[in-house]
Length: 434
Image 1 (cartoon, rainbow, N blue to C red):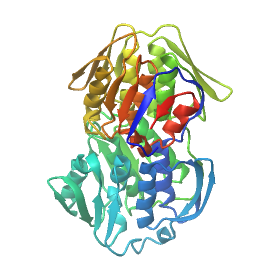
Image 2: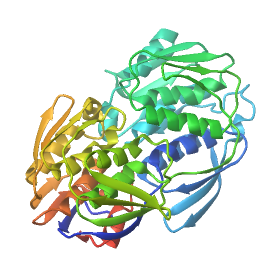
Image 3: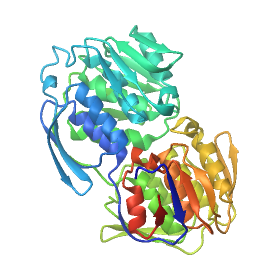
């Protein structure tokens, strides 16, 4: 979908959707493979904009794609980094610029990778990525005398130096991505390290995904009840065969579609998953629905949905589509502990409340969340994606319960994470005009 604007004719959708692979797990698998001197095979990848950013970035740190096979929109890649065989010499020997595009995962995961270069590494980004906060890393660099240049804390940022083993104190309520970035690099150092979490850790599920990926590639980190992570030094990444699970953050759009009156079933999911966004199942069931997993498919049955209080601290990416779900519930719902959404691809609290209110929703912003009154249906309106993939997809799901056409400006934002979203939407009966 290249069009910046689509018109959706309201219609109940029905059918089976094969959920795309987890973007969160894909990033981690590509990065781990790109740090291994032995070849890895990564299965079930899609080339979303964010994953392409990580692949391109890792290639600048020495990773090569040995082979690529494709089946429909899914790819299997053989990846290796021959330069990691002997770290007595840095894999990168000249200045490089890493373009992270609009991928927050790419930049926060890879910013510590300056350690792999003997020369300066410059990180750049586009859109709101350039303005998002990186003060957690800057503070750590200051504490360790690592030289970096930035303009008032925003991108571009240029870093030169080497990490040293030791204790790293990191806030747990800013972004778990900073912690993951350190976890990728600290095992390669000569000495042992500890990451101490100085505030309550949010998004624990994402740390679990990191630890699971690291284990698959031979890296061991001891989890001290999410208050500290003990990291032995002198480790090395070992290539393996890795299959990426279906993405619960993307499945959430279709599960909500099913919960609000559509007949959608999901293929390609793993029931027992560490993904934090699997919380969408708990949310639907807390509201009165039932999610079942039979014959490798997820289905939703609902009699009546009631408003609830949702703590989004561990699953912030669900909030845009959960706001759609709450609007179709009876009574009042509250979404709390979601203040970090204000520094995502858009200010997601403002974006989703503004756009759904144009469609007749009754949503009030709070500093850290939303108060949502249930309505019977949405109405047709011209709305905007705010160049945010999750806003665009949430508005598309809302259109299935609209009384009139929904025009979404910025519909191509879905390419960031789910480039085949509109194709899948049409496959289950959605009527979309570019």
